[in-house]
Image 1 (cartoon, rainbow, N blue to C red):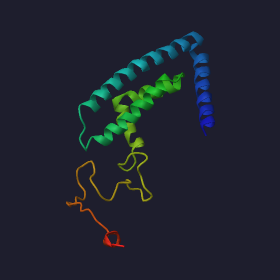
Image 2: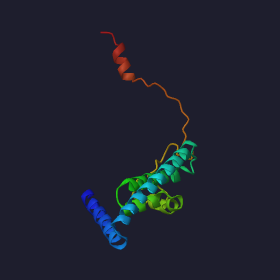
Image 3: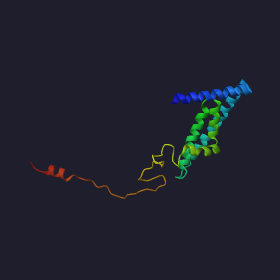
Image 4: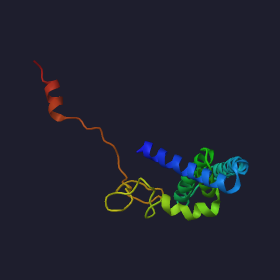
Length: 160
């Protein structure tokens, strides 16, 4: 599977570079590749710093899911910018822009759940008990009692 994805990536990037070189020339194509790489790196650096500040400022239960989706999209955009090639750099730069991330956020989450947390019935695979991020859930107030087995105690006390 990984080999097929790499082959598709290579073919797409080569097709873009060949089409661009035949249209605007080899020199301009190389300049455009370098420009998209540098602009993408600058954009990635600023968005990563901005996102880290947002995460450090504190999250509420309502903003956790959006922050998680943004983290995935910023990381994916940064990786795509760093990977050599014009198509991947443009796609990565688009994922780093906040308006485009807002449009791509539903692709990362499904039915209001993170991508890997959907169960068989298309619901979030949340625990049925305990506390959730919103603070709701079952709370059982109790006391732990040390239990001693009576039969074992009787055997130990029996004189021989």
